[in-house]
Image (cartoon, rainbow, N blue to C red):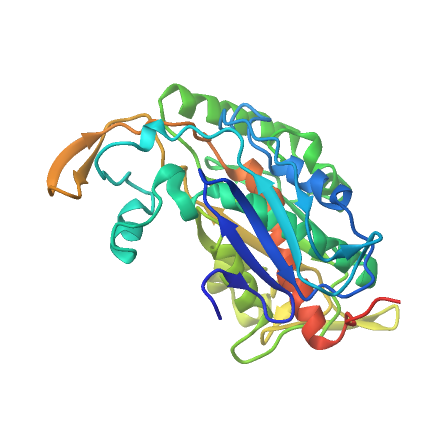
Amino acid sequence: MPANELGERLRVTIVGESHGRLVGAVLDGVPAGLELSEGDVQPMLDLRRPGRAPQSTPRRESDRVEILTGVYRGRTTGAPILLWIPNEDVDSSPYEGPPVPRPGHADYTAWIKYGGYNDPRGGGRFSGRLTAAIVAAGAIALKLLRTVLGVEVLAYTLEIGGVRARGDLTLDEIRRRYEDPLRCPDPEAARRMSDAIERARAAGDTLGGVVEAIALGVPPGLGEPIIDTLDGDLAKAIFAIPGVKGVEFGAGFAAARLRGSENNDQYVVEGGRVRTITNNSGGILGGISNGMPIVLRAAFKPVSSIHIPQRSVRLDTMEEVTLTVRGRHDVCVVPRAVPVVEAVVGIVLADHALRSGAIPSVLR
């Protein structure tokens, strides 16, 4: 599979760079007959758009998406869908000069991998800017899941800077996550998260955190063991989001501290369907969905661009230098990552639903 492509039946190819002309995606495999317009994609892009909250980068992008191919008379044709998002507010001046990798970024590894020919402006291909293309493609995948299977994907800010939302949030509360600038459905935790962000900003520093995602209505049987497992493909896709350093499902790492009698999800019949009393597996067993809600968490490291002097190396002369990062950056990416995680989960679930036959190739 090409390095810039995700999925098998529903394939997403991401194009562009942070400071190039555009970012975009080619989405191939969407069934014919789905009602689709830019209006189905733009609202989700607006949730990710920079410059809308205090913790966000001051970069201003309208992120107006155009669907250039694959739609005729308001419905998908079965042909590849080309999504185009221009870059409008680009300032490459902080990236001029000798090659000095920013600590925490992919500057050095990209320099080695591509022999110094990579585009370093704003991180190039390794920038969070490319998640705009992922969100655009994910908005279509999520509509496909809702339309055909009634699947709902909800992500929200669970933790920022060590401040964690309470553990008894209801689905109704989580559905209101976007009413808060930090996308946290726990108002008291959101207040403390905001305070932590402001303290980090004042110190010239940054924060990381955790996004939790819940997928409701996923039918049992999705997943292609033993290699293309559902949780394996979800984890791989989420790790493609810049800044992600950990993924866990259900009880996750906490399961390592449980006994089998505590961790096992026991089966019952509910409404004529098999259900489990608990959901420590996060809705996936043996790499296959079991019909329970899929629950996963993605851990985001602190933003690497900090306004504190750091040690680095000038790569063309191998001279050690002191670097102070310039440019426009988020203090914490977690709130803007919430729709990105939703999009990625939607893409993977739609791909597996197509592979299993749960979604047909033509919608009638």
